[in-house]
Length: 144
Length: 117
Length: 166
Image (cartoon, rainbow over all chains, first blue to last red; front, top):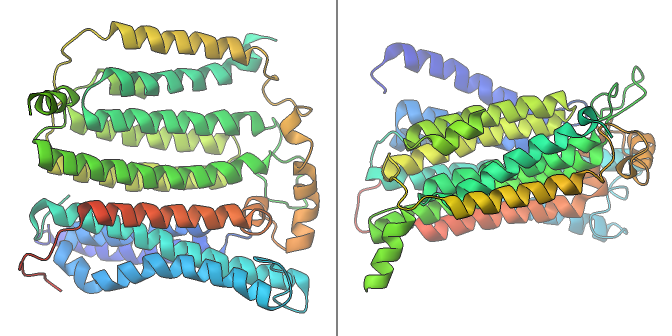
């Protein structure tokens, strides 16, 4: 598909927009619908879109395998570590209000880091699954 | 109890039955997974539909609105959707492997091959 | 409805596309029911990721469904019988959108009233998901992780000397 100029140009614009939208959804979880899961899926979808237009090897160069696999585990670790941080600062596991002198601000921080962990893991898993399915097809540049 | 007050349940039941029917009655593995996904979405509706209050709004607190729809099912279903897609991915991966091992994704053919070996 | 078409269709590609349409319709219904977070997630996940994965599987397998060998009378009877029993069960459920129904009464008013004050987050769904019921979210992330690991375990191919690009 990389021979169609119109698709390539449009794809570049849309992919940038999709990534920005994913970040917007992630950080606006407090005030509108959104949160880690939606943002993770949208971010993975943008990379998948890139892979569809430009081919799987190109996508693998941009987001290599080791990065995706690290992302899958790192998000869960981040989530768990937030809980441990809560314990180290005096509360129970996953208590947010001890993370800052002002308990409400502590909640904000805890929710921020937790959603970030969710985003990393969800987008990593979705992307990894896509890589596996698409790479299985012929082992080279193939459309799903 | 009138028709209007309960028909939402019946619509979701229809979807659930359709999903279950596809899973039981069709032999193609991919179609079974689609039926399972339909069943899952009907279950989401079963949880969320009773949570809505007519005249309420989305559960984002703001000074302009007083009545909010119930946010608790939303939380549960959000988790359920993501878990559902994880299981769907696993199911699809299994289908791919079955295809490579048996050469077919029709349940009858697969059982034939198992019986004859 | 889209579901009846999905049942009847045998070309798997159109089944998958119909499923995508069905997912989008479901997301719209969810938003109409005030479940904005859920609708967005269903739209992104159901109509996005699921579609891509299904299309991937279709590319790897066949595109047609076989004609069923025997008339599906028994499954149809089972499905209808279950449906009738479920309908009978819903007669006892509260009417649609009744503010006095049990789901609305015990814990939820506390979440709605105290949530924004205690957590500083107006979106009650996010507050409950990340703070009040944070353990559930931790479990969910672990499930997603496990699903990913499972797919990796199923589909990983050994490096048989094939040149990997990047």
